[in-house]
Length: 333
Image (cartoon, rainbow, N blue to C red; front, side, top):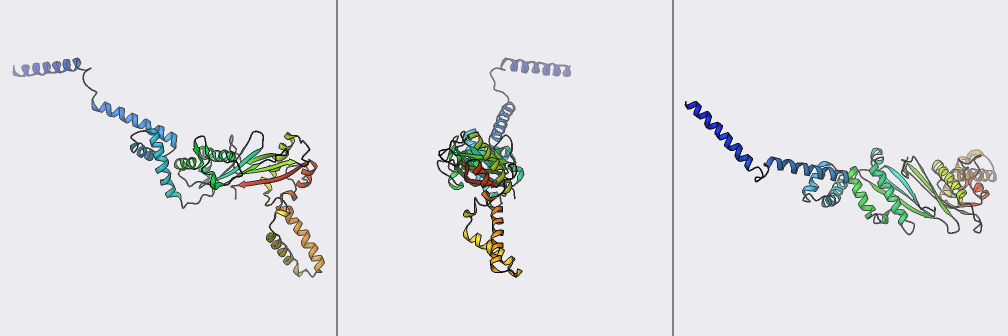
């Protein structure tokens, strides 16, 4: 009897509890563990979004959100300030010897820019984040009103971001020491000139690669209206030659006097014991000096792209064009 009464009491109690829960289900908050699951899902979602936007590690994203009351924009700013500083302090002494170069040109080929951005490793230098950074720097250089250098370019504003901030964001994402090592802008001659570029080892579809050259061409006669398409074609082939031949100077007059004298002295010493008369020695030295010019000076070189490999100066003259300036950058040793 006592056991039966006990079971009846337990059954009645369970029924009363069940009825109470059913009648009050809309008046009580969710159990705490359900709220914890929702909060955890929300935080993970923010971390995922922040990581996608910044490329920073998960640990840094958690810290950024924690220090920003889970405000995504504030967390991005926190990462820029603390993440870049943290990365910079760790990688400042590491040498950046890899990287990419990139060019940017105006639609009418009246101006172009050429930049080089360095990274520590070839792997990082091929990442999409790094490629985007190099192209961003090239476009920023193109926005400069005058011929530019790397130093002042860091403050150039493009798409609501400076080169400096874009560099910091990329360092947070890539975790390597990055630097804008070179930047220049070339403007075409107002007398019908054009600027043409070529990128070697190009990472499609970007204008970034392992080496690049710019050439500034103009009509030989200022009153002569050249075929622009022909000038662009000629310039493209010349830029390709420059990347392949790697000239050091435009012509012999561009070589510093001390370099010429050092080369002349070296050549003279090479044949000093030949026993030849001084006049003959001088002729030999002059002849070899011309070979030196043909190796190091662009206009004296044989064109590696044009059929028949004509001398570049003679070829341009025959085309009614003149070369005003060229730039060459390479990250390949």
